[in-house]
Length: 93
Image 1 (cartoon, rainbow, N blue to C red):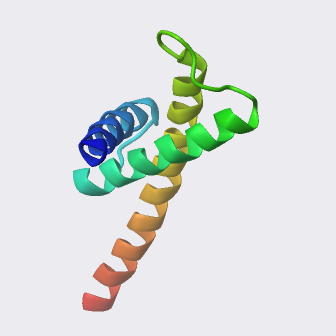
Image 2: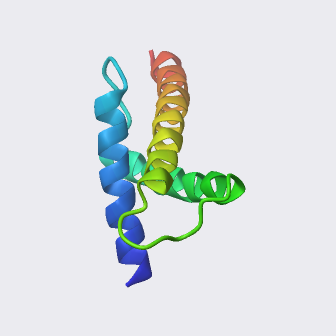
């Protein structure tokens, strides 16, 4: 069940991150989900580094760290994806 929740959270975080980034992102949905999962992992690590542990109720500060990390990772990952995809398209032409 843990993997299913990781995929669901990654999917949601990736979509929110894509919505917050200006312009169009070209990475496919499966890659956005992976970027969102990485954002959740990195956000949790950063939150722990700042001393935010698991709390009662909704832990908004931890979720903010996750979202910020997801935005950064989706943005950087999309740029990398497009540079790789662009090179492949140029080689075929």
